[in-house]
Length: 149
Image (cartoon, rainbow, N blue to C red):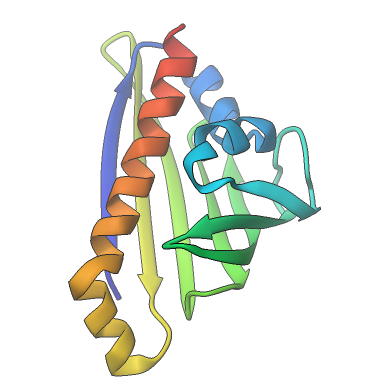
């Protein structure tokens, strides 16, 4: 089960960073490169614990749908979403926010399991883990730009 960790320092208050990260409309803006949009469940505004959202996006040239549920939320320090349906066998994404040096340290921890057993493990090594690292880092950078502007 690969673990991707990404840290992003943002010169903005923790509450702002937390709310930007759980805002469906902002999520769509920060993932425009994959044409991501909410098509089911909560489709706008701030996600709360227990909410479910279905995302549609184009990843690796393939249009996909993924449904995630917010399983834990401690405002403004963390929230967790898990996949309930989608291309992965499973995933858990923990979003952490820590006040630091007059700003916020945003930490993404993304644990996932690819489908298809040994073939999925091979896909991880060949391309999927690097793709997911870049995707998470790109979104974090976009959130930083929004929060700091």
